[in-house]
Length: 337
Image: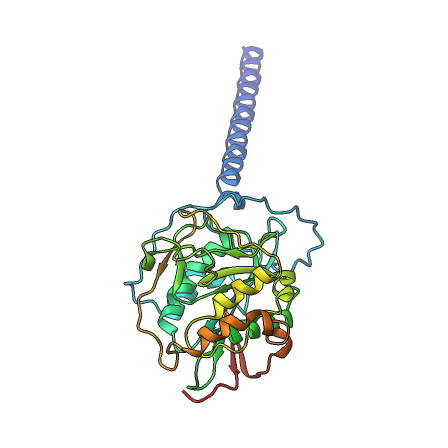
C-alpha cells in the first residue's frame, strides 16, 4: 500500500514539473513574440515623423549608409492652412524636440545626401515666419536632410534688399558648417507637396513653379523667384546675387540671367509636385517697386563679375540661436526708406 502511494506521488510530481515547464516555455515564447512585434511596429524608419534621438553630432563612430534617393516617409500632397493663430511656442512644441539649437537637424538612421542651408530673407514678418516654420521643419525632416534654417533679418527701416540678405545668408551659414546646397525661400511660401525635395541638383533648381496666387501656373519661363536651390559651386560661379536691387522686384530675374550667361539651365519639378500656397499679405513698407531695377536688368552681363558675393558689405548686429532657427540681424547699409 505504501509503495503504491509512493509511486503515485512520484507520477504526480513528474506531471506537475512537466506542466510547469510547458507553461514557462509558452509564456516566454509569447513574451518574445510580443517584444519582436513591438520592435517591428516602432522601427524608426517606418514612422511618419522622425524619431527623437539624442546623438545628432555623428560622433558615435558608427558608419551610416547613405540615405535613399527617395525618402521613405514622404506623404505627398499636404494640407496647409494659415487661419490658425500660431505662436513660436506652438511651433516649438510641435517640432522643437526634434531639433538642435539654430534650427539644426540631421537624420540619424542614414547619412544625408546633402548639407543644406535654408535661407529666409526677412523683416517684420513674424506671423508668416511662424506658419513657415510650422510646416517646413516636418517636411525637411521627412526629406532626410542635414540642414539648418537661417533667418536673415534686415535691421532698421531703410529700403529692403532681399538679394543682399540672401548673399549674407550664404556667407554667414558657411562660417558655421560646410554646406554644399543653399535653398533660398520667401517667408510667405509653403510647399503643398513634400515630394518637392529641398535639395540641389546638377542644374540650378526653381522649386516654387506653381503658386496658388498665379492659379498654379508658371508666370514666365525664366522665373527664378520664390523658392530656389543652388549648390555652392553654382552660386559662386555666378558671383551670387546682385547687391544693387533695392526695393521690390528684379533680383530673381537678374539671377536667372546670371545663370544663363554662365551656361546653366534651370530645372524644375512638375506642376503638381511644385505647388505652393502663399500667405496673403500687403506689401511691406519700404519695399515698394523700384523703377530703376528694370534698367539694372539690362546691365547684368556688365556687372555680374564685380557685383555680388565678392563685393558684399554688411555688419552683423546680433546672432540669436533658437531651437527653430538661427536669427541673424544685419545692417545692410540701406538708403533711407
